[in-house]
Image 1 (cartoon, rainbow, N blue to C red):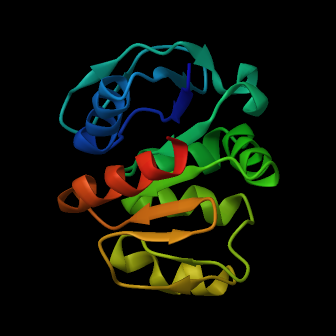
Image 2: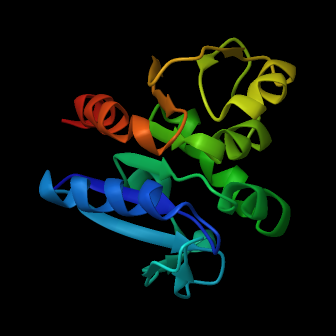
Length: 168
């Protein structure tokens, strides 16, 4: 069975975690949620998810996909749970698909995996992406090798379409 891992903490954009979570399950994938402490998390609008494991227990070689939702979660992860950026880098080292939406690009920046890559994200991250060596493209979805990125919740259908094409 194909396995996906979503990493997040409190303050995630509700739709950017819930849409991929349920869509991946609909595609017959086993989906785990990893948080810094392995505890339940709540989104910006109150939607809560139970965690399956702490981020430090996640093993990239047991997953076929990593999903990084946006909202405030990526900023909190990179400042309060540095293991999250290390996990992203480990997924990238193996060429495993990584799907990041909106502010999820902040965690990709901290993982130092953007040099020479083309991606998108929330528009305010353009300078940060470019300073990290990436090329920002204002598009609903951008695929560059194993990276799938999108800008905002309205892009979720395109985001998931391209994500599923990489793992199926």
